[in-house]
Amino acid sequence: MTTRPPLVLTVAGSDSGGGAGIQADLKAMLAIGVHGMSVLTAVTAQNSRGVHGVWELPEEAVRAQYRAVVDDIGVHAVKTGMLATAPLVETVAELLADTDAPVVVDPVGVSKHGDPLLAASALESVRKRLLPTATVATPNLDEVTQLTGVRVERETDMRTAAEAVLAYGPRWVLVKGGHLPTGAEAVDLLTDGTEEHWLRAPRHDNRHTHGTGCTLASAVAAGLARGLAVPEAVREAKAYVTGAIAAGFALGEGIGPVDHGWALRR
Image: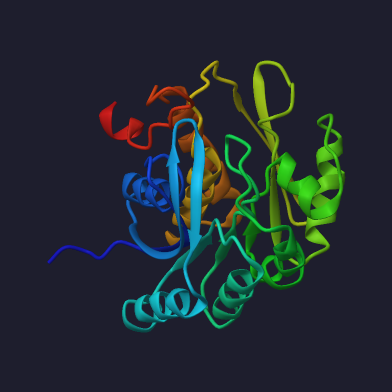
């Protein structure tokens, strides 16, 4: 008999182009060596040029998928992505509060192309219901501003941004600074309000970065499912995503995806 791998559940939307969302999550989980499972929250018509349509699933469909997986198979970590509406955010938050496993919340607000993926009416539910369930929250700079009003214009602002997100209740926050003009390095800040870990990696000159946020959050969840402490899980995830960005490839006429399988082909 083979040993069963750790179990990670993604609760997110589908990307028909395969670069982000559920598809990216499952690819990253496979590459890292965990068993990925999924709860679909929405279907998107999406390609390299943008999001062309979004259809949310009913709350009962999300709840039924979640309970079917967790009650029978079990789970060692959960990752959330696109939740789209306030009712879906609140449904998922209720399910997470009843699950004894670490949770990585990627508070997805907009797509790589600037298309909205979270209703404005859902922001308060993310703040008050979803973020308090998070072991780690992983907002990018636009999502920090959307959630807290804090604008990050320089590296030193990231500490203020992290404090503002932590005020909503996650145990740790990873503020992703990839959009900062910081020269040759991409800088992220991981903190629980006491410890600080500044994570630096080479900035690759590659426009094909679709799915970066989904992939990073999934990699963190995979590390937590394997029993790693939060700082170690985040460091390993950052290294994995840095390699995936370096290997990102053209797909269609717009922004291509990161390469989730880059480490398997070395």
